[in-house]
Length: 284
Image 1 (cartoon, helix red, strand yellow):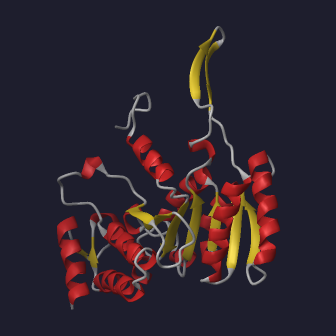
Image 2 (image 1 turned 135 degrees about the vertical axis):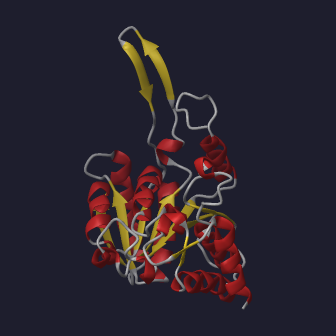
Image 3 (image 1 turned 90 degrees about the vertical axis):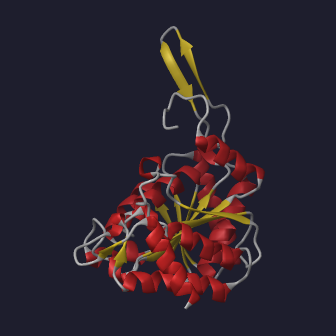
């Protein structure tokens, strides 16, 4: 499953599913639970107060562009991937970013590589053009390498970030370290602006962790928080979404941890036990 030379990869099915269902907008919230500030690899004062959302374009860019191939020449092997975006693709994801920012602290960071890439230059141009429709939103532009540094230096300054497919894929994996583990971060893949009844697919940002299969080790919290996002964005059930999120919060407040967020003096739980505890909190 993880052999780069394999003809079929699990990711191929996921990419086709996103494209086929029109799930172009990926929302990945990164919120640090106060009791986990010592569970990350960064200093507590750096991650304290982090509460951001990455809005990632999901059905364009390098992962879908054509041509995409490898071939042999007399000089040796070559390969090509194509980074292409249309105005329509860029505008719709930027509008999702603006709308999400409007529901939060009204700060939007558009992440690109406009100093090098033509696709990023178009991205930035369109961001500037449609920002006139959102005069209440503070828009800033940031190169992707500078953004990667900001995640480590001053992540609490960030509110909503919007970016293209591959940049978002890499940045959100980096951002998972702010939360202590990939097992803490949910995601929503949506077919439109999140307004309560939006069609979507929900999943944690991490993979299936086959190396942990059958060991009762994996952290279920990201999956559980993905359910909360589903209740909020696809079923318009805000109170129920908050019930799920509060159950996770209260379980962590009582010191229960899975292996990946374990620290001294806390109570280690397996996948099943953590899930059962959170379910009990929701029912109480």
